[in-house]
Length: 155
Image 1 (cartoon, helix red, strand yellow):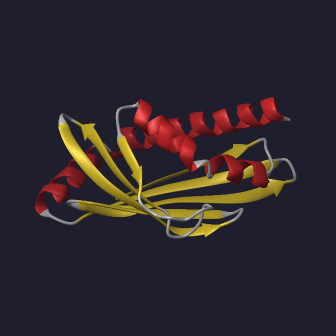
Image 2 (cartoon, rainbow, N blue to C red):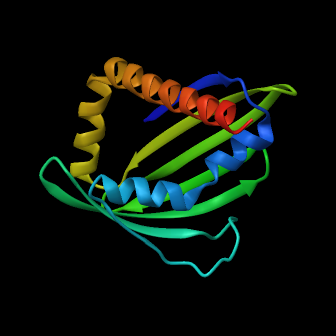
């Protein structure tokens, strides 16, 4: 199952990529929401091979996910693969410069079930795909607006 959307941001591609690669900020944000995030690689700079172990509660159950950066091409492409018991997939971010001060962000999330219970979960998500897609697009649009606002405050 795949979710994808795109948004245009009034900021240069380098600035957008820089904000998207603030992994320490994402770690802090996840911890504020109750997740346990542990970086497990030894890389000094962002790049391929970065890894995190994440534990969070969803629908009353503790979930464990391992994230790994599988592609990191500055300033246009980033892919994070994830695995958990039952599910695996990718989270892809692609940036395209529309002009010197405008960037298009394309985000795709793919879910692949690995066992029967995960297949049932994905099947139930497919039944609600329209509403879930709309929520996904709304969240990405809100995040893109936040990037735009942060860039304007910095400039």
